[in-house]
Amino acid sequence: MDFLKNIFGSGNIPPAEVKECFVRHFPNARNVEWFKTDDGFEAVFFEGINEKIARISQGGKLLECRTNIFLQDIPEHIAMAASEKGEIMNCIAVVTADSLKYEMIIRNKNLTRFLLLLESSGNEIFMEKL
Image (cartoon, rainbow, N blue to C red; front, side):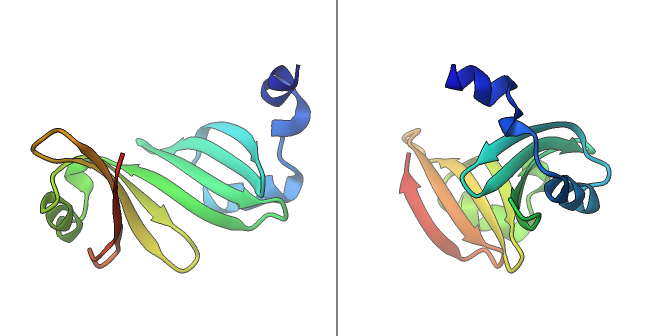
């Protein structure tokens, strides 16, 4: 029953301050789905043709926004840095109040997949095998 309550119950309906924060930052969002998290809410939505996930605190502060980036739209210096590690499979721009990072899945010549996190400068933060 808790499973159904989580999907259909009021637990996924954000309070007014969360909704206000969301609308303020993403006025053109469409197809919004809300999910309750431990520290607030997540909204999965589209803005233009980009799929995004926004994490908002219970008090209405935007914590993070993740944007799926089409491969051809990855900044050149980021694509070059990641390509040195392998083939880029996907890329997500992770924006917080004080940083921009790129989270990528890459595949090496042996078809082994890795999670790669890069700073906005292209410097590697970490890389781990999936």
